[in-house]
Each structure stands twice: as structure tokens, then as C-alpha cells.
Length: 494
Ligand code: ARG
Image (tube, rainbow, N blue to C red; front, side, top):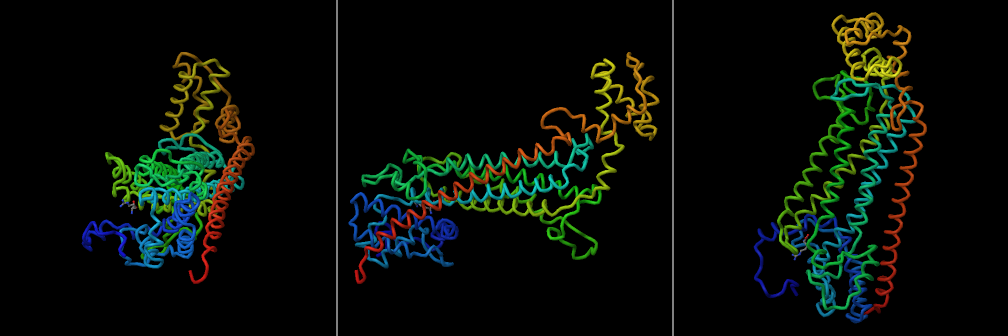
């Protein structure tokens, strides 16, 4: 029997191919089978379906394949699975599978189940990249690097300070994804098409079997909403943006112009014509993926915008964007982790970059404020004039400052002088950084403490991750045990 029933004549092949989600349903097929199992277990438990019939359905589902053969023609995997059950068990038995459920609540549930794993994979890859950043920080953290604003040298920093900046952005990505997880992990089952059902299903029992920690309460909301998909795409997008900024820095820093970093050959590619080339191709793709991920977010928003409640097939079009984005961002973070961990610093280049470029000039201004009672704006102007003179004459700032500060400062209405030794000390990048007094600043003395704080972040994300994974595995074991117990009640020959 064709489960589509007699209401409509056959769909055109073209329309069926156009509206079918079979090509993308492979991603949720396993979850769809689990949802069917839990639903049947609940029907039997409620006495809504005869135990023997239910046991046969469950036995079929336990052995059902989640592989979708290429070219299989169906509206979707939900329909194909039920049709296969009817073909195999007969409609008197398998005809109870969809009692009290709809593809609408089923697909919303399967997406949430699959998304749980994708979110945890995303968090796992974030934490992997974070630990690569920390391994660089503990190896090379004390190396001085130029810090940039407007991509112009601004002030020196420690390499650790720069790595921690990226780390902290990824920390928020991990936290955001874990908060999202709590909103994903709610069950739509029992909502049926959109109004709920007269079938006496215990929604909380089904939710428990499927590892959810609660319900999407309103049945219409449960089948109509995809905001958790949008939220996941937002989390993916933000993480991909953070990753692309790191990727861009790897590309810049490994260029001849910067020359601060040597990337491992494993993440580079050569040119088919220029024998000398070493292109940072993995970082380029990481940078590009952010565009694709963001595109998925925009696509999902555009599909959902102004969509009337409740279910519309438009919702089907959101899901492939979700999986692609989650996979892209997870792969991006994984590759970047390897690139970061295997990169080496070109310390000589960094050393010459941080010395003698005037990027410590504010230390002299601060000294004039603290020790000579000059207002900061005046001190800023005095030092600015010295820097300008240094640029005009080509003489190093410390020389110009030593010889001309008295004259320049007099011009700003407050004559001060500072001896050359003091000026040299103030302008020295290492001394500059040792003078940083604020929490979260680039003082090298704080590296060890900042490192420990972040090791704590990693440990706590990892423990949340393993707890959530263990809960998922336990609920799946429970579902298997419940349904296998039922399946075993089918006598041979039945
Ligand atoms: N293939 C559909 C999707 O992915 C499943 C739900 C279909 N529901 C329906 N009433 N046609 O969203």
C-alpha cells in the first residue's frame, strides 16, 4: 500500500524531485529512526497500541537502515521509512507508526537531536583551538611582538597577550554554544502537526527517552520555529568570524612583509608555476569559510522572515544551511588549531620590529605627567612634536627626545627636561611592558597567571562537554534497552 493515500493523484517526477528533502535527509535519518522508536515505545506504554504490534514495529525500526540509497524517490526519509515498514510488516502493523505524530514534530525533533551533536562538536573544536593557542603561549609567550591598531604599529605586546586576546574571543564562542545547547535540547514530540493530539502520549516520557531535558511547550511553536537553527548559525558565524581574523593574521604574519611567523609546510601549498612559493592555503580557506557560514545564517533568516505559522515546507530549506555551516566552522577551527600549534616564530624579525619604531612613545608622555606634573594632553603634544622631529630628521626618537625635549616643552608652556638614560629606559619595549599596571594588560609578569586562568577555562569547557556527551550516550543506551526489550517479545514466526 502507498502510504500517501488516495487523496491525490501521483506527483510529477519534477515536482517530487524539487520538493523532496531526500538528498539532505541522510544527516537526520538515524535520529528519525530513534524518534520513531521512542514514539512507539510511548504508544505501547500508554496502551494506545497493542504491545505485540508495537513490538513488531520496534523490531523493524531497530533493524532499519539510516542509509539513503542515491536516487531513492520519496518526499523525505520520514515517508520512506514508514513506507518501508508498511511494505515489510503490512499496513495492519506498521500502519500504527505514525499514530499521534506528524512529520512536522518528527523533523523538528530529529533536527534538534542532530544539532546537539553538532553543537558539541563545535565546542570541542573551539576548545582544541584554544589549547593550541595556550601551547604557543606557554612556549613563546614572553616573546615581544608589535601590537597594531589600524594595522599600524601601536604598542609592543607579549606574544602571549596577543594569543590570549584570540583565546578569550573563542572562550565566548564556547560559552555561547553551550548556552545554545540548553535551548536546543528540548523535545517537540507530541506536538503532532501543530495542535497536539488526542492520542494519550506522555510527552515527557518520549523526551526522556530521546535525551531531552524538557519540552518545547507549545505545540505550534514546536513545529513552526527554527530559531534554534538561526541561533546555531549565529554561533557558528561568530566563531567563524573569530577564526577568520586569526587566519588573516597567520597569512599576514607569514608574509615576507611581516615575516614574524613560519607556518608548517603541512598547512601550505606551493605554486604550479612559481617554484619558490609557500602559500598559506589552509588559512585562506579558513578565512573564506567564514563567508560561507555567514551566508548560511543570512539564508536561514531570509527563508524564515515573514513565514506564516505553523509548518511550511520552506522550513525544509533551512536545514542544509545549518549542517553545512556547523561542519564548516568545526573543520575550520580544527585546521587552525593544527596551524597554530605547529607555527614557529621568527624571533629576530620580531625583535627588530619592536625596537626603535617609537611605539613606546606614550611611556615618555606618562612619565612627564607622573614625574613632571604636565597634563597628559600637553605631554602627548610634546612627545608628538619629538616624534615628528625624529621622522623629519631620521634620528632615533630617544636621541631627539634627549636633545630637544627642553626646547619643545618650553614651546608648550611648561619647560621640562629628562636625562638620556631615563628616556632610553622609558622607550625600551621590555621596560615599557614591565610598567603596565592594569589587570588584563600585556605585562610579561602576568603571563603565568593569565595562562592558569585560561587553563581553567579549558578544563571547565571540557568537563561540561564530557558531561553532556555522557548524558546523551546514557539516554541512547536507555532508549536502546527499552526498545530492544520490546523487540525481543516478538516470537519467531510471528
Ligand atoms: N522533509 C520535511 C522537512 O525537512 C519534513 C516535514 C515535512 N512535513 C510535511 N508536512 N510535508 O521539513
